[in-house]
Amino acid sequence: MSEKRLQEAIVTLKDSGVRITPQRHAVLEFLLNSMTHPTADEIYKALEGKFPNMSVATVYNNLRVFKDIGLVRELTYGDASSRFDCNTTEHYHVICESCGKIVDFHYPSLDEVESLAEQVTGFDVSNHRMEVYGTCSDCQSKNAH
Amino acid sequence: MSEKRLQEAIVTLKDSGVRITPQRHAVLEFLLNSMTHPTADEIYKALEGKFPNMSVATVYNNLRVFKDIGLVRELTYGDASSRFDCNTTEHYHVICESCGKIVDFHYPSLDEVESLAEQVTGFDVSNHRMEVYGTCSDCQSKNAH
DNA sequence: TACACTAATTATAAAGATTATTATGTAATA
DNA sequence: TATTACATAATAATCTTTATAATTAGTGTA
Image (cartoon, rainbow over all chains, first blue to last red; front, side):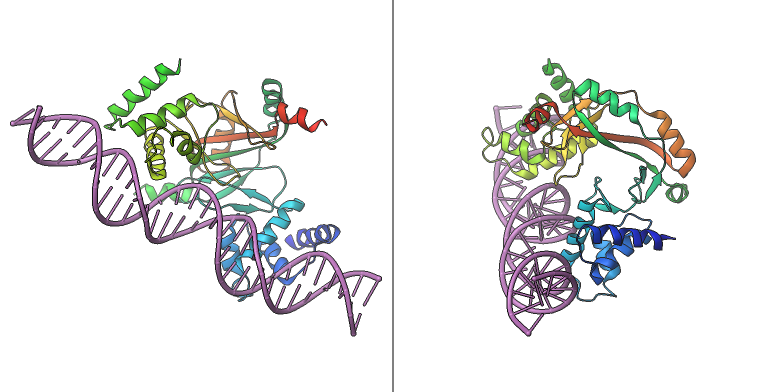
C-alpha cells in the first residue's frame, strides 16, 4: 500500500534532481512506513542495523532535502527534538501529554480562521497548524489505579 | 496600564509563596511590558544592563516559576528557542514566516474541535493550540520591490 | 533589630539536538 | 576515462536548556 507512495516520492525526488542513495531510500522508506512521526534520532537508531556506518548528519541532511521538496513536514512541540511527518495531506495532531504519543486527526480545514486572521492582522496568510492536547486512552487506564 | 497587571502578578506570586527578588521582578516586568513574546535569551540580554551579574539560569528558573504558577505560557515554534507570552487569556498567534513577528489574534475557542477529537481518538482532551502562518504587512511591502 | 532558616542567585559544567566542516567516496557526464 | 558535482562519514562546533554546588539574600520570629 505504501509501496505506491514510496515510488511516487522517488519520482518526485528524481524530478528535483536528487540522487537516490541507499541511505536516502532507507530514510524515506522508514518514514513512509512509520505511523509514529519519529524524531531524527529514532530514524537513525532504526536504520543503524542496516547501515552500521551511517552518520546522524546524513539523517538530518536527508530530512532537510525531503522537507525542502515538500515530501515531509517538520513538527516542533514543547519537547527537545523535532518530529517528522510524511503525511502531507491536511490534518491535525492530537498529542498525549503523558506519553507523548501523536495521533493524526482529520477535521475540515479551518479556512474561516485564516480569512479572519487576514482581515484582522493584515497578514497574507498561507497556512495554519493546530494541535489538540490531552491524555490517550492507554494513559487514562494506567492512571486509573 | 500594565502597572496593574504587574501588581496582580506579584500578588499571585506571593500567594504561591514565591519571593519577589529584584531579578524576578525585572523579568516579570519586562515580560508584561513587552508585546513581542521574547525568548529567554532576549530577556537575559535586555536585563544585562540593569543586572550585570545576572545568570542565564536565573532567567530560565524564573520563567519556569511563572509558567508553573500560570502567569506565562511557553510557545514553541519551528525555530530553536522557546518564546514566552504573559497574556494568558485565550488567544491564538499569527506568525510572519519572513521576519518571525508574532501577533496575538482573538477568535472564539474551537470547543467543537476538542470534543470531536475526543470522540474520534478516545483521548481525554484538555486544551489545544493553533498558529496561523503568513507574511506580515511590513514584509509584504518590502517584497513588493 | 538580629538570627536562623530557606529559597534564590551565580558560576559553571553538562546534556542534548542540530548544524558546520572537511576529507573521502560515489554517481553522472562529457 | 577524466572531470565535475553531489553524498556520506566522522568529527567538531554551536546553541538552547538543565543540573550542580557554593554563595548570597529574603523572610519570619524572637
